[in-house]
Image (cartoon, rainbow, N blue to C red; front, side, top):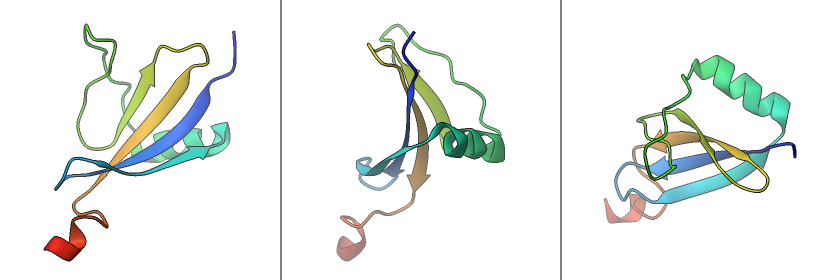
Length: 82
């Protein structure tokens, strides 16, 4: 089984877009999950996990990717418009 990749994604609550994405190592990812005490979310029929706020997601792929999603109130695209 291939080792998973780890990624942190930041989503804007105003425009609902992906504001940032960063690959991290396994130790950094584990520390984030432990610090936030995030439960692993349950996948729906579409094979995409659902949740709110800071969540941990996993998707099926040739090389699995585990994603830690964070939310910010305003991103760089939305800030000038406000």
